[in-house]
Length: 107
Image (tube, rainbow, N blue to C red; front, side):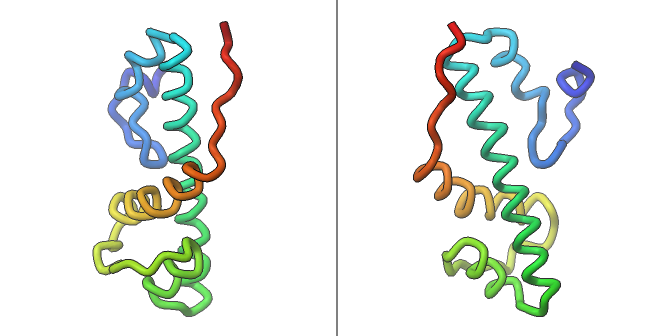
């Protein structure tokens, strides 16, 4: 609840932005909450892998290609926000479009 009241960025996710979805708690908003959480969890996982490949000696582009299989300009990946955004857009989104299945309805 504390995270919902603050505008802190936690792993790319600002919980305060989801407070309306949490209070609505309809099936649709539950799925949106679930998808948002999974999206950022996967984006951060891609970030960990991308960083690890970079620490093994590959440059940003080659690391991105190794982790996502996508060749893209990585010059903007100079901080956490830009890196998790690009990895989310091209890595997590691709993964979720193939494999995401919502949880069964709670109601």
